[in-house]
Image (cartoon, rainbow, N blue to C red; front, side, top):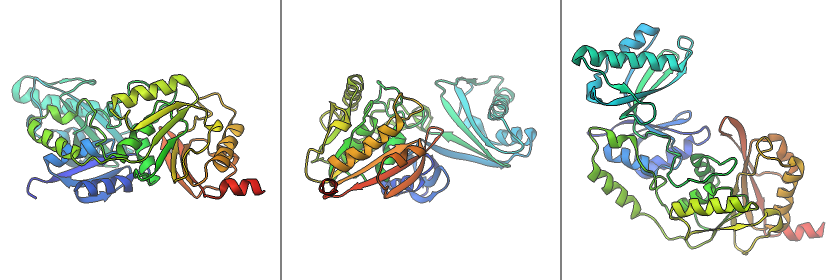
Length: 385
């Protein structure tokens, strides 16, 4: 299509293939997975749709220029090769986010400053006026990515990272990132065709993402704003049309989604967040200690959770992970249980052999996302030993 252009969706390590699949299902063209990113083609309406619907994207970037930067001077000249008046007025504000993997440029702040100077000087030379920098609420967010000598210049269509869904106002001690939660759920194969449990739900992020996947609700339907709303080509009518077409594709959910937490304060936070997301009809949250529970229904159960980490919370690690394994083994037959942990040593205390182990990162912490399969006869076998 004539109006299609290249875009890049950024994501976390380990989610590239899932994001590529999401993009293909949405209707993107020329989808190609890279490292922590997926490139694709689409038009203006698809850019709106990608921001609204993608669960595992952190940002959608629109590349506008690429050049080789060998030093400070070639970086400055390369940025000035773009006619910035196409995107920005002197009366508007902008900010530059720079990431650098280069022997020549070692500080992202220096690169951002140099690029800012090039843009400001271009305006000043042409008009005698200059746009200002606004780091918190700019009219235009520019992304600079330097790898070795290659410099990519993109417009950030999203603004704040897309994990800011807009429903989470209450958090607990170590909340999980919404994109990480959604990616874990999709990696685990969650599709809304069974009962679901998060036995250590904290402020309810995994529950909210699980419900949105089950009902095919767009991930960012509750988000307050996107960067593209301040662009010159902003088409409010088209955006509303895309939003409505996505909402028409939501589906009925016929199973249960349940969360437990032993802290009453966490249970209340989870309920508040689910209400904010208009998901409180789909999800029930209870003040319970997982280790005192057992499976409530006979059918298949899908479990995904983020147990507290020893570094952040005061728990006895060995006993805690042993109790996870014992509870699953004894009380949860016919269950697929997945959890993420940043404590790789702790897994040996679970006492069960994981059927899958996937390397992810929780923030900067290397983690494993592990799967344990409890068969129908697990409880019976336990008692026969």
